[in-house]
Length: 381
Ligand SMILES: Cc1cc2nc3c(=O)[nH]c(=O)nc-3n(C[C@H](O)[C@H](O)[C@H](O)COP(=O)(O)OP(=O)(O)OC[C@H]3O[C@@H](n4cnc5c(N)ncnc54)[C@H](O)[C@@H]3O)c2cc1C
Image (cartoon, rainbow, N blue to C red; front, side, top):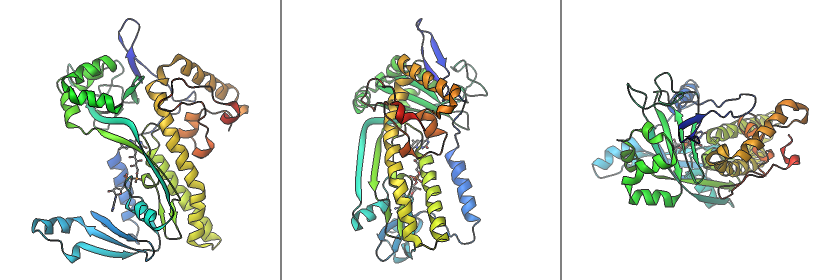
């Protein structure tokens, strides 16, 4: 749902489909997903879970890790000393490093092997704002229903060429909004927080009223102003004993909404490689090589696609040229299916095609102005 003003300056919201076939994105609450996964793990007889254990040392050659029990350590810290039992030692056959952006497993792989690594801090910060559930007399948009202040069935965007506000409805009927803007815009607002309300009114029509005029400045001041990072590295494996998956291998900016999907795909590919190697009795080393050969290229591709999609959601969704381009692509996709043509967005979001096989020619990155037409040979499946 794209929010803005019409030519008479009235507030409008306009629904924009992801694709001509009516596909939609499915959202899941993070806590619910974590609980489901933990329940599944707990039901396995050969799994032992350790909560609040931080891996502090990894010795890849000896295949050992040390973990600090944070509960014990906290208790001892109050008595001003750490104790031997706070640290436990574990040996491993295969270490799966799913430990996020600042991965300890990746860091130890970098120390022990020729791992290429690059990280880019993008010139954009983000800050969370909560749009509360609707109450009697509160400001709502025309599509609001079921106790929400905005439509619960859409992802909401307030595009603005150089910045953007987006919002996703949550299970408790509030809506989680995120402001994305340049470092200099944030710096200006931090210098003049009294301007926050006016800034929203000028740039994101109707959003200040939805968030609440009395709380918008407080939310800007209280909530963190977070950076966005994009990480690429290669390889994603260490010999036959360690592998990194998820953000540890490919933390990306948030503009394609693929962070979790890319991590789940890592798992799918790793299991396929493990099963194939086991069936042919080729060993762990072969399985990890197979995973690495497939996954590095895809991880790099989705990192680039995520950056290039920022233009599309902050500006493309209201560019006539871009909308015409999109309509043209979708008409071909619907009425000439024999061409095998599918839009880039559909291929990324609604298929299991490898990211590295999906072209992003023609979609300009964060500094670009206009999208060009995708090269025809690149857009056929
Ligand atoms: C505000 C925000 C909104 C997002 N929205 C979306 C979205 O809408 N859709 C989407 O697909 N993606 C989204 N993402 C990205 C998504 O959250 C990540 O891609 C995803 O969580 C990565 O999962 P992961 O398991 O690889 O890493 P993480 O979720 O970061 O998990 C890493 C885990 O490792 C643990 N850990 C770290 N170091 C150690 C250590 N030394 N010892 C022991 N444990 C350790 C951490 O405690 C954590 O539990 C969003 C990200 C942010 C920040």
